[in-house]
Length: 102
View 1 (cartoon, rainbow, N blue to C red):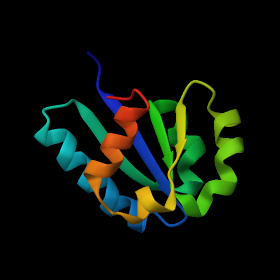
View 2: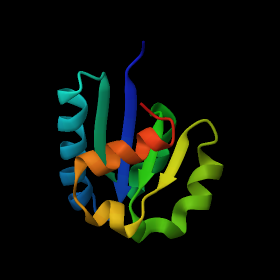
View 3: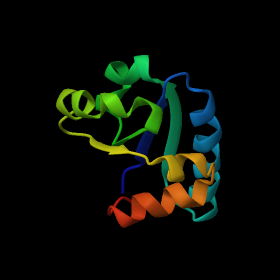
């Protein structure tokens, strides 16, 4: 099975790097072949087609439609303030599982 690649985007890339590392720890503990990376939203067009899932932080929710249109073969998920604000990798991994992404 190929590695699942997840990219998290926010306006600066700082808070997402913290969340991304917490998600990575959860996937590693579960023994899953998943790679989680965090980026500034300006990188979405460079990275978007090379990943399986794009997670958008709530502060860039305005970009959801354009991201979906620009990356039709990539699953795009807009995180809620509660999910993102939890800063809890398990919460986000569980959110993805609920959407059938494992």
